[in-house]
Length: 278
Image 1 (spheres, rainbow, N blue to C red):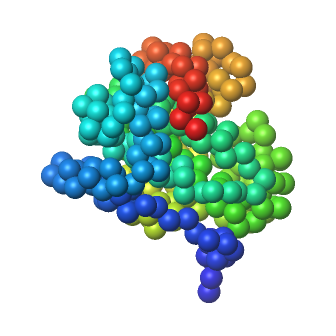
Image 2: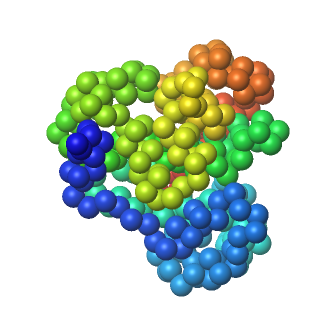
């Protein structure tokens, strides 16, 4: 018998797909022996994706001392690991062309900020969490929202109106009441379909419930990054943002408020960078 999640995916007019160079890079995540050279060569032959990646590489986030005009320049300046993240971010962001009742530009700017904060926090964990995985999970943490808007635009608009200024856990509860499925479950299936590593899939599923049995450290980092970004958008002070972070998630990660103070302070700069990406 089809589930509510099955119904959601069946109602999406056209399930988004990713360029082959992006899927190849996803397959290479976490693989030290991956042949990145051939993937980069494929990127050179995708002018649209290459142009977008170069625009991101030229942003202030990477502190370019000169204009980056070619993929080889981008590799030399930011490294293959960061380039891989940029290509995935560009491919994922371009996968949804039009989504009813949703400001895609604002959506992706938020996602990029969350991704940037998640990567910064992951670097504080001294190797426990892969920063590249944390960035990608942060970038995709609300992909299920896009799917809900695509499948059920009218219901999604009502949910969005009712879910302002509430926690993601509360939003999940409202989504389940209305649709019998939540955006975290939808995002998990999409990430699985796109063959993302299990760690990223798990983070997308459990970021809204970071202390659940199935949650991971990456999920907890995305929780913190999303909360920091949301509270900043509400105009909260850095001190108020820090004091409002979930203590159990912080404790599980072995982090103190002092550890993430600089990451909270970096949000405004990340917002400026995200605006240049889109």
